[in-house]
Image (cartoon, rainbow, N blue to C red):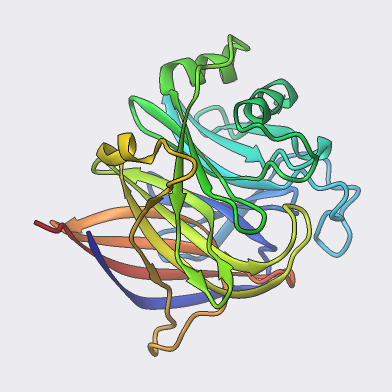
Length: 309
């Protein structure tokens, strides 16, 4: 599979801090920041039209939640349940404060429900054989009709990991506090910039593919920020998952480096994406990026995907 990416437009949002998740529902884009108490709503022209409170914002300093207290909402996905259209926002699980999730009911006047996922993250750490605090770092979440996918970003040179669960079981767990779904685990190798490997940062499913963003950041753990060296868009063929079960031999997957509209390298931290098919092999990708300085950027990218014979 060969990828080509051309950035058609770029927009800075000074009023949206630390964008980390994006979802597209009907005629709106919803954006969450990892240190913001708000869910931001954009129209189809990428204009900020509204913000919705997720929780009490009294502890916010200059529009941002202090690092030690933030829920670190790193991923978001949209799904339907009965007549309701819902957004699920997940904390990264990197610390006790980051074991939360939020359900937003778009159908019920943006009603928000806070969830404690401590039990779930304990299970995920056990599945991944993680013993130390600050190593679990769930950065991507995507759902299709059959499966739900979580992306674990490694600290350092470890494998990028995809965790797959049954979607119906996952919905029952989230909505009805049912049993934690069984999990399958897959391992991937992403590109390297200099000596630093790229790590998963966002996920979206379409056409039997999992599209992902990945960024290269010089940091020793899942909590502290580091120098950002660049970002990628990549694609995992979901039919190839049986080839990604060996932790010692992770599956190498295609990814292409993000660029600015003028063709220069984009030195920003891509955090999430939504994908729309334009025609066979051509996709419009909307990427949200965090500059770690309290602002966010949106890139509109045309992605070409050519299957190898």
